[in-house]
Image 1 (cartoon, rainbow, N blue to C red):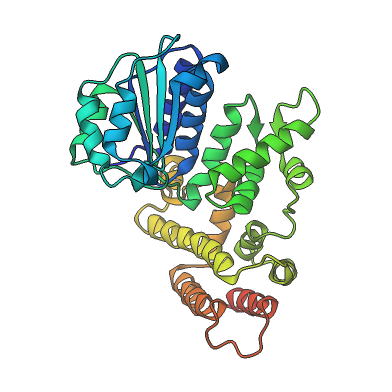
Image 2 (image 1 turned 90 degrees about the vertical axis):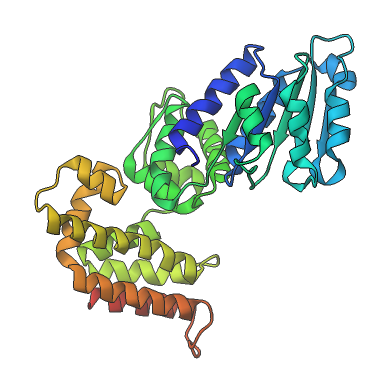
Length: 346
């Protein structure tokens, strides 16, 4: 089972700390559905393993589709020239037909070679020799894809790693903008940090709106909030705006709404078994920052189980329509407003 993102983040930051201090393992197996950590660790090793003057003779970077295990092993078994170590990096290693054969080298790796096996959007078979061998002789980073509901927490942790706090609503807004694309969040954050005034320690919604170019006022994040409160006028105005946006995609909007109403449904189930749950139980079921508990307390009153199930059925219907099914001449904006109106009238 893949480690949670907190453990993965901690492991990768420990690796980066060691690498920057000149401490290297003989073999790194970087793998998983989420490429952010794979790329981060690989880039840090490439930057810090060798001095620029040593790279010409001691650095080999190849791609899995272009090499076989014998070629990689031959390169890894060479000794460094005029340097303490050499670096061999295999990118897109999942494309190697003979990938598992690298386990033979990994059983007795050269101390003077750093071998990086980087798999992009894929993972080695944990039942086989390569994974088991590297787990004993080197380091394995297994980076699982994050779920939508985990993103605000990951963003908060990401900002903490840069010595900043981010407010829960700002983290939720950024998560809505970027989805589960960690690289996109990293890029947008670095751009924003360059524009923040010196000495700023907390990032809020206005910072996100100003520097990332998104508006909380007109977003699915705000739409779910207004639907929770049953604020019809604001919800319909937001639905019309986001439905008219050039990049609007009905299936993505429906997916976000489904996540929200599924949480409300789970919260209903929790309250049936425990009418007064503590914050720990709420956090486990809802998967959101405690900052948002009051919104869900209101939403669960407005959408009891039967109404939640009706909304989820509507979302299924409009997911089909958003993908081109039985819509007639209705525009995406009209569909979005229609869906919102029906949810409000449930």
